[in-house]
Length: 351
Image (cartoon, rainbow, N blue to C red; front, side, top):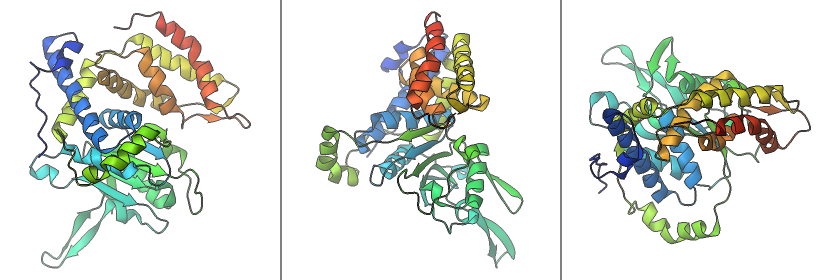
């Protein structure tokens, strides 16, 4: 049986990777341990997707959501389910309402009540009682999210942006850990509704998944029985530990003013570039800050570095920046706009 993560930091090597006040050191070391336990647990179930798993855990702890643009059979369901199973709920009344993992298969005939929940009449009490829908979970897989109607998209927009849903003029709060992994097939456009810009902006990352390499694919074939039967067990963390890790990273990972200046300068260059039709919003920069902190903690650092910006900025802004007609090389545009601000950042002493 899997064992709950032990947080005895006397033997935790991550405790030596941070510096500062002793209390902050302890909390941040615990957070780093939780991050690596999460990623290691998911990587035992999902092979060949280490970079995607790292980005997904970063988004989860940073309070964002992830959009996977992929093809059928790429492991998206396994990834979401493994992440949900790696987070255990404490046995209390508050958390009984929320399941660890739920999957919603989006179709054109789906109704908002199918995802949010619906009031049900109870003949015994002669009153209506709200029955929660699949959004009342820690991890929600929104499969083929672009196949549903704009009404359902509006319900998802409120849930993802505000972590709440509204039914019959009554607002219900979702779990603080509420996290959406949405998917869409980039090749199949029949019967789809393109995601509106405001909803795309709710996703912290948009990740395009590619086929895994040969060695990883061989490992998938060799271990599929063990992974199917959950024989590859490992440590897990609790919901409360993940939320405490989020708070510890927010308080314990330093963001130097030069980092913020670099992000603003890159954004201004993108908006002023003739190859860019629409630049990113200020909100995207605000959402990026906690993601940068989690990425730094995942690398056992207590400060955000230029490497964190180089890794995350294209993922965060890629689906928010619209290029002018005829321009196709988005990587070149990002590279050109990042060059001068990143060089200025390199001359700063971040820690």
